[in-house]
Length: 122
Image 1 (cartoon, rainbow, N blue to C red):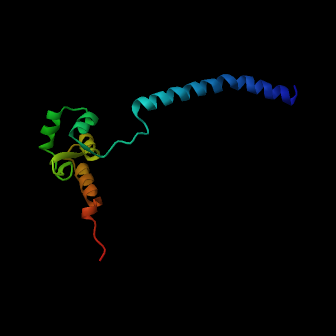
Image 2 (image 1 turned 45 degrees about the vertical axis):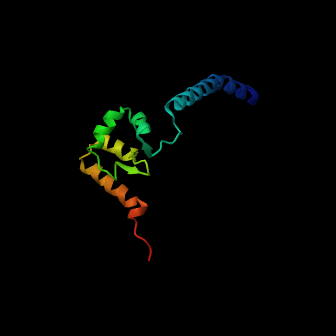
Image 3 (image 1 turned 120 degrees about the vertical axis):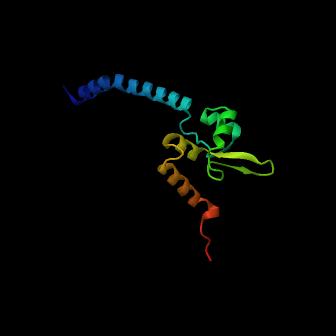
């Protein structure tokens, strides 16, 4: 068997594998599109978007808001005084428990990162 025969045998052997890889790549792309992979989720959102992204009703969001920290999990902004919601911290609270030490530490770390809480250069 010469070198050309070997190369042809390898090409024939791997052709089905390459086809399968291409098929899987297409399926992965479809799943990523369905899941919204690569699309960034906004961190601060209004009520309607918060309900949609958290999968809860407006009434449930309003009930939860009574137990969340104003200025951390949510706050009012602008002339309309419409509440805005901090999705990463709300999701963290859902995972760890809003009263857990780990979640309260995450809230503290988030607050320290806010421009209004950073030390100003003199």
